[in-house]
Image 1 (cartoon, rainbow, N blue to C red):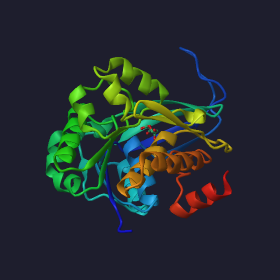
Image 2 (image 1 turned 180 degrees about the horizontal axis):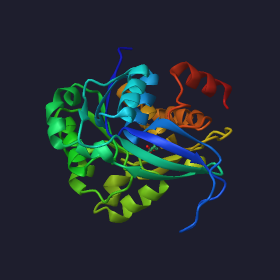
Image 3 (image 1 turned 30 degrees about the horizontal axis):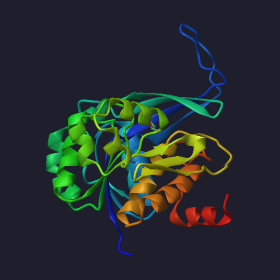
Image 4 (image 1 turned 45 degrees about the vertical axis):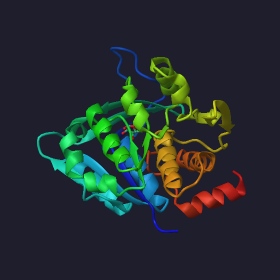
Length: 295
Ligand code: RIB
């Protein structure tokens, strides 16, 4: 099969990760159990996931001209993500995320930094890349007008659009109408349905990632469920991103929604067996072995 084109438009962050055995209370100082920096950002995580699974993956993004920016660009190149549409900004620092890892769970604070410079003008400059994609993959760590503009350029060119609505914002109906698949987690899905003017139309586009409860989606208003895999969890940071990157590849390759979900569910399961949002992202062979062994 000819290599399909996935374009990810979104954030690039350095994840400053600290292991703790409790979450500090207000005004409290606690000792961490160790820390490390990992490449992250929902956009970059999804791009690396897609590239590792064999898609021709481009990122449209903005990154600071600083040490983290250089390290993160190098990491994207190393993972075969095309970065010629990533624009450097000199007036803002590269995005960061402070992540507390506690008992297999995480708490995340994102500092947008240079990601907030991903304006509509950047998208207009890079519209050829969007228009020549098979799938465009979006999240909400960049300005909302830019998400809207990207979806519009893609939709007008007949390109499929996947929106991962994280972190959650109340979204205009006009944006949701341009999107083919919306991939919230449980909490985001509940908020989306509550805020929606037309929950029934929205439902058919929803693919909900429920963590250890698996994946659910609707077909002709009927709910379908795909159970999760049982794995040794090290870090769930970026599991949703692994799912989205993999789902985008399979949709670009023409698989059905259900087939794409099953595959992406396996990719997300493998991704949580290592610490760091991108450390556990598998290549195609690793996913096929994992599915065959049924683990
Ligand atoms: O989805 C996980 C990601 O969210 C982290 O990598 C962090 O950077 C935040 O963007």
